[in-house]
Length: 362
Image (cartoon, helix red, strand yellow):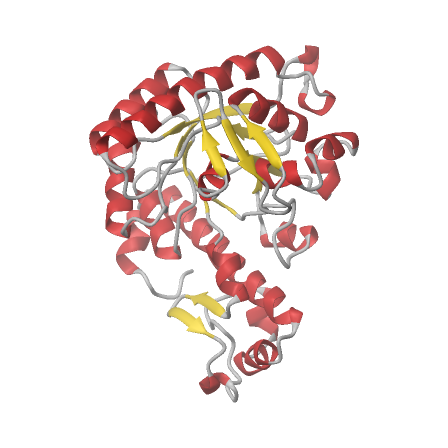
């Protein structure tokens, strides 16, 4: 339960990096059944600015979103700026990808920004090692993340509830701070990082540092090497992963929360996910296809539009192509998670769905 509603798990969180899921309005997201969105502190810090969002009443009010929000601390985005950043014990100095201006992020400033934004769940500031990373680099990164986690929690405990929309009865904070497990691609480091992060007693835990270029088989190995050391009674969040098949698989391993840009990014490139596999709607063979993208899908796109029309929109470079493709892909991901939750409620477990994938879902 969050201050902005209950979140049923396992859950998929669409990515709304700049307080917007690209191409989809908030009313449509509500209609699709989105329970929680992900926003990014790094991008919001640069534009429109945390102070501006705070003046406008916090992120929920600013973007007119009444349901839950989780914000990433910005650690992964800073990691992606490898040519524009310098890491020290204190934090990270980086140059904006927008205008080249210099900025500094540290655990304290990242927490302060997220407290001001007002997300329901905020993330500790972490350091994400590149792939491949040697043993020494992976351990150094893990140790730095652990020290930053302690600083993140200390600052959060001292300042939570200071922003009006983050304070509940008696001034108590309504936000929750999750810790992040790192450790590169070393199972031993993953185990150690998980155990030491759990000792800090966060209300939830994320598995970070994956989907950074490693093979998918290695991603799964690292998830398996980590998740068993995280408390099953608290949310376990796998950051930045994955395909429809993968989110089913990870739910079966005990992951409660996932996010990924794939459904929206693929939609913008004409790639649609269906119960029978992927469809590249840009292909000429769909020019005369009167059928829906997915006959097993009940989304507003599949109920109304043909493959031929969607192919025409994409070939004509119409903005509506991106909108409709994104609505379908998000619906497919959200329906997949609903099916997983239904399977779990029947006592079959999430693995049941992975065994029969891909087939039309109920």
